[in-house]
Image 1: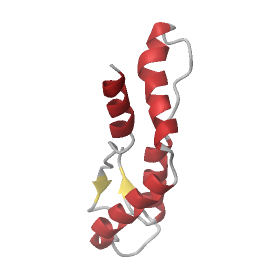
Image 2: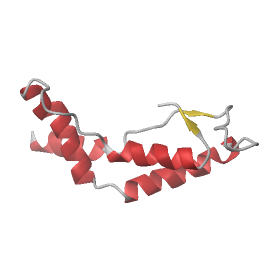
Image 3: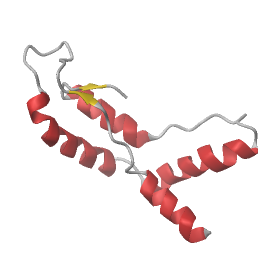
Image 4: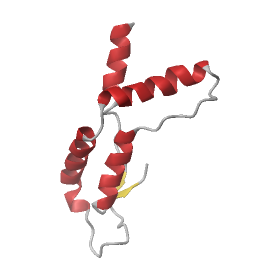
Length: 99
């Protein structure tokens, strides 16, 4: 049981894949910035991974999917930092993230 729980905690942290609108513009640039999408995805993924803690993100996963149901979802849901940092990085580089 402990092995599976540790596996879930460490795999969860890197599971976010953003959906980016490559045809549209964010409104702040005159030309499309989607030509640098692959480079920006790699940089933002590294940036988000470097600025989050896998133990903390894993504990949020355990809280949301194991503890909250046991208290009938009365406790507030904890948000993950990894997707927020990833999405904000892509938005600041001029990409339109849909999710």
